[in-house]
Figure 1: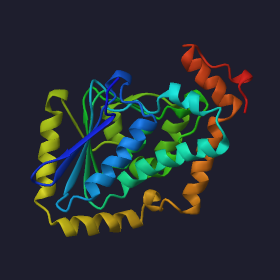
Figure 2 (figure 1 turned 135 degrees about the vertical axis):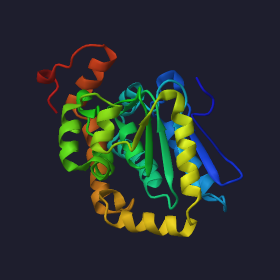
Figure 3 (figure 1 turned 30 degrees about the horizontal axis):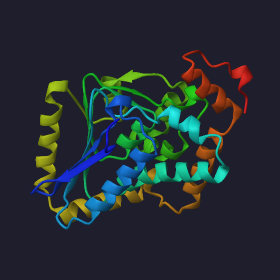
Length: 267
């Protein structure tokens, strides 16, 4: 196991790099990774010269969504504890979404479930040509409730209605076609492509960038605040879905490497 599930640093230009660091589980998120992202945002937010945040994932894959073993451990706990987990997960994505500086995501390999919400919350997304995507929650009897607004901003309601309902996998070219990523490059060129976008952003006025992003967010699905009633409802839905018998069956099917028996798992 890695000691620090999230790594972060900042260079002399004010460019911060936040690295998801659970490569042994394809950077799947659990409480440690969620808290690590929140801690990184808190720490970097105190840096007076912060200009850009670059988000990466260590290893072969960017982010494989939730750690389903961890989710299965959370599921039997109280409704309040489940809601707290969903709220923390939402807050990590939404605080990334509303950072007043540009964010750049570099995606390689798998980007599933919550990972698609994470990149939807970033301003610029560059994918390697080996990247593979899926909004996977429905496969396990769960919902993507807390990232639906960010996904709607990134790819539009029509595409969410397809990809969040089918749970199908799609490659980098399709991700670019629907707007989930902005550029696709060979894997070996991913870092260099990210560096080019960073230089382009650094050439622009920092106050103008912040104001432009804030104006864009005013018209977005994901522009709602943490305390908005609409998001509180999504958090409750996300948490309560985890505790249904359908989710229990879906998570069991994952653990047992078999197809889910939805006739047995109605919630």
